[in-house]
Amino acid sequence: MKSIVINHPKQQRSRQKFHAILDACPGILREFGFKKSTAAKIALEADVSIGTFYDYFSCKEAVFIAYLDRELDNALEQVAENAQQKDTDARSILRALVTAGVEFAHNHRDIIKLVFTHFPDELHQIDLRESKKKIGNIASDFSHNTKITFSGRDPRLITYTLTNIVLGFQFRIVVMPEEKFEKQAVIEELTNIISAYLLQ
Image (cartoon, rainbow, N blue to C red; front, side):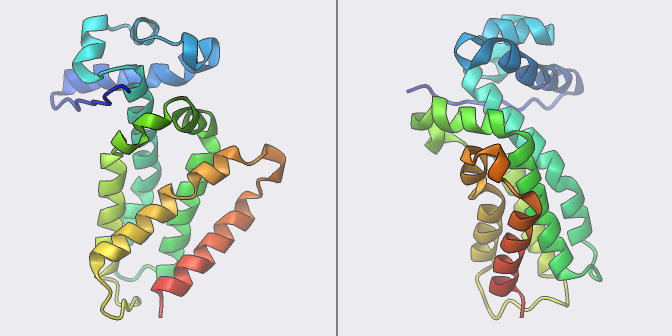
């Protein structure tokens, strides 16, 4: 079992190299498949040295996980901004959160499926820290929304629930045959479920 280590850089130049490596992931995966994708090929595509690659990532698996974390974090950005508005309709925020999760899973199904199928033993190491932080912020911002009543629920439970809305159903989405995936129906059903749980 490999150790999944991702070192997020703080300096601007280092961040550019870090993101260049992430940007190289989808193309390398499409061209070579997972088994023939290597750290060296990813580094070459990103135009960085192999030493630079290992400054940030312990292995190629870590790169794919970091890529998913970045893409999900980007998808949640607008949802987080809307959640900060006190007059935003609560159901619309929840629907936007669900939509972000469903579309992320649908748009990145190949890489998500790769993570689940090619290194299942490493799944417990995965920490989508940026995405979880963003979801936690959304849950926190809900507490300032006067249209939502939580009936004394533990805020940590709310954060856990919202995190699982976005992350928990993705395995099911990526393994469903493409022709059976009805995105709008899934979004509406999940929004109804979580609305019934959270909204009074």
